[in-house]
Image 1 (cartoon, rainbow, N blue to C red):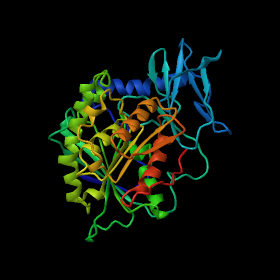
Image 2: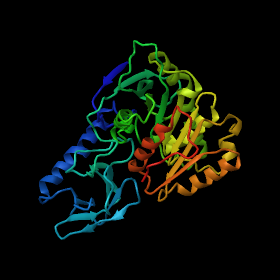
Image 3: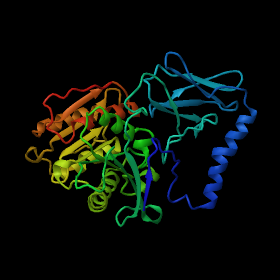
Image 4: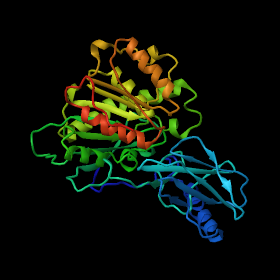
Length: 403
C-alpha cells in the first residue's frame, strides 16, 4: 500500500499497536488527553502555557494548584524544578534556545502530563512532550520557495518484525525534486533511522528531513537521492516494554531483527518499486541515537551493502566493542564513516571511546563534535552536513558548518 504525501510536514499521534484496537484503552486515552486538560482549563486563570521571549528563551507555565512538585524537561534533557506561584501556576524560563523546533514535557507529582494549552505534540511512543518552535533567521529546515520532492508512505506485512498489530510495518520514501519514474536513471539511497520512542515519520515531523533535502538540492549541495525512513524497531517490546536498555541481550535482539528486516524486506522492496541503485557505493545508512547505533552496527557489519555510514549521537555504549562489531575491518571500510555527538550529550563519553576504538582498529572516521545536547537541533545539523558528503569522493578535511 502506498500513499503520496507532498505536503511539507506530516502530523500524527502514534499509539501502541497493541493498544490501538482496545476500546477501553481508547476511552482512557480520550479521557486523559482531552477531558482532564479541558477540565483544568476551565478552572485555571488566563495564562499563556508557553511564551517565546525576545532573547529566544521560552517561559513555560502549568496550572497545577494541588501539585507539590512540578518539573519540566526541555529537549529530552534532565528535568528541572519549576517555581510555584500563589495562584497555582508553575513557571520555568529556559536559557536562550537556538531557532528550531524544541520539545518540553511536564512531570507533576511523578506523573507525565501534556500542556493543555498547546495542541502541538511530538509523535512519540513513550514520551509525553509538547512542541514549540523558536523563530529566527531562515534555516535549512524551513519551508522555502524551491522545488520540492515527494514523500511516499508504504505499509507492508512483515514476516520478521515482532509485536506490530497485523504485522504492519511502515516506511516512508522521499523522492527528490525532478525524480522521474519513467526514466532509466537510477538514484542513490540513504536509509535514515530514528531514535528510541520515535516513529517512522519523526525524521520529517521533527527533523524536517524532506525540507532539508529540498533546500540542499536547490543549492546544488547534494547528489539527488532517495531517502528511506522506516519504523526501525525489530521487536516492539523494545520500545513498549520496561527496562530494555538495561539488558544488552534485548538491545542485540531488537537490532538483529530490524537489521534482518531492513536487508531482506525493506531494501528489496525499495529497489523493486523505485529507480534505486543496487550498488554498494550508492547506498548509505545513518541515524540518530538508537538509530545511530543501528546504522553503525548494520553498516559496518554489512559493508558489502552500504558504502556510506553515519551515526548521530549514536547508542554505542557497548562494554565490549569487539563483540558488537566482530567483522569490522579497514580493508572493507565504507567510503565515509561519520560519527558525531554534541559535547553536552550524555552519550559523549561513550562516543569518544568508540572513536578511539575505531582509530585503534585502523579505521578513519570523520569525528564531529558540536555544542548542544541530545536533541533535534543537533540531529538536523548533522543531516545538513552529512548529506552533502554522500555519493561523491569524500574530502580529507570536509568543511562543516555545525553548531
